Length: 344
Image 1 (cartoon, rainbow, N blue to C red):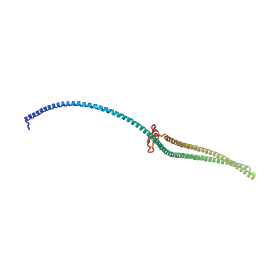
Image 2 (image 1 turned 120 degrees about the vertical axis):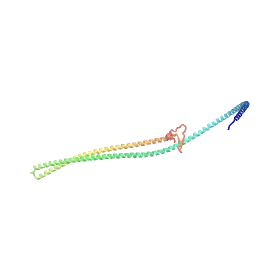
Image 3 (image 1 turned 30 degrees about the vertical axis):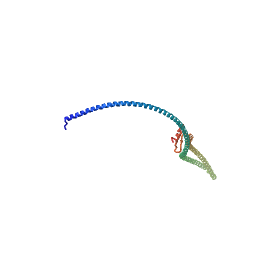
Image 4 (image 1 turned 90 degrees about the vertical axis):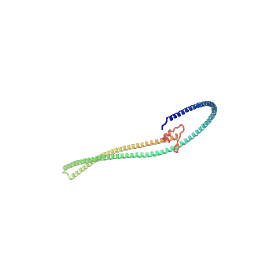
C-alpha cells in the first residue's frame, strides 16, 4: 500500500500541533506548580513554627513530668532499698539457721557414716582375716607337706646312699677279712704241717738211732722208751698246737680290733650324716618358722592399720551400696582413699 506525500505532511502537522499544545500545557502546569509550591512552602513554614512551639511546650511538660517521675522513683528506690536491707537481714538469718541445721545434719550423717564405715570395715577385716587364715593354713600345710616330702626324699636318698656305701664297705671288708683269714689259715696250716713234718722227721731219726744203739737191751725197756718218746712227741705236738692256737687267737684278736675300728669309723660316718640331717631339718624348720613369723607380722600390721583407720576415720560410707559422705571441712580423704584403693 503506497502512502502519499500529503498524508505524510498531514501527519507531520498533526504531530507538530500536538507537541506545541503539549509544551503550552507543560508551561501552564509549571506555573501552577510554582504557585502551589510557594503556597505549600509558606504553609510549611507556618506549620514548622507551630510544631516548634508545640515541641517546646512538650519538652517543658516532659521535663516537668520526668522531674516528678525522678522524685517519685527516688522515693520508691529508697523504699526498695529499705525493703532490700530487711530482706538481706532475713536472708542472713535464714542462711545462718540453714547452715547450723546443715552442719548438725552433716555431723550426724558423718557420725553415722563413721559407724557404718567402722562396721563395714570390721566385717571386711574379719572376712579378709578368715580368708588370710585359710590361705595361711593351706600355705602352711602345702609348705610343710612339700618340706616333709623334700626331707623324706633327701632322707631316703641319703639312706640309700649310706646303705649302698655301707653294703659296699661291708662286702669289701668281708672280702678282705675272708681273704686275710684264708691267707692266715693257709699260712698257719702250711707252717703247722712244716713244723709237724720237721718234728716227725727228727723224732723218727732219733728213734731209729736209739733203737740201733739199744738193740741189745731188753724188750720192756725198748718198748718203754718208745712210749715215753711218743709221749714227749705228743707233748711237743700239743705245745706246738697250743702255741699255734695262741698265735691264731692273737691274729684273730687283731682282726677283731680292725673290725672294731671299721665299725667305729662307720658309726662316726653315720653320726656325721645324722648331724647333717639334723642340721638340714633345723634349717628347714627355721625357714618355715621365719616364713610363718613374716606372715604373722604382716597380719599384725594389717590389723593395726585397720584399728588405726577405725580410730581415725577419714571418710564415711553407707552400708547400702557404700555411698560416699563428704568429709567435714579441713579433713582430707587421702588416708581412706589410700586404704580402700580409691573412691568406694
